[in-house]
Image (cartoon, rainbow, N blue to C red):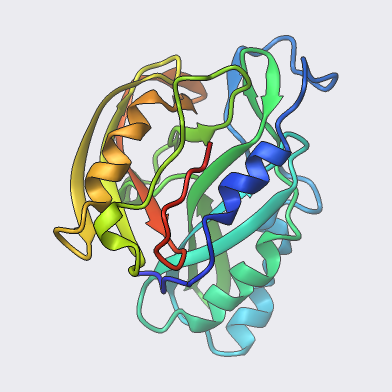
Length: 250
């Protein structure tokens, strides 16, 4: 599990500072929806991570999960890792060092670039004496094992979505950090159809309820499988990292 910090939920504040005031001039007119993508350019995360250096320094096969914001211009920020395999310390640091330098292809919601928050998995492995790297923009175990072409729905900040009011800390948890893993059902237009708490920590403090309730009013870039938007079920994790005071993110 990730180490919980004592910082506030900064990424929500950052997102609202980045919301466009109108239709973005960089909008992709031909696409109604598109997730934020890694891209194949020089500043793509997959090209920034130095696999040769990792191998020379002794990094063995490892897996690291991460999350970060991606602005409507494609800039990555507010990144962190939070789950990793044993012995992955060097890969974890490399991912952290490179994420905020990375440039993504920005997400598109109804033909307009929008900021999103993404979660992904970095898989480093050595075969026949050569380092290899694969990055997936999801964290679903079955799809990871099979290497399927799947991009999980991405939490999007959409101008005019007045239903979503943000998340609050549970009143009884004002002195605690915590997290909740919620199984979400999202349709092919990015609307949440169901939310069920899978796990919360610490248990019994209300982090699951405070996530599963508001998330029903949020909007997502829909999941993409084999390049097409699809309805899907996936696990979405919410981290409460502040000092425990009640927070509103809207």
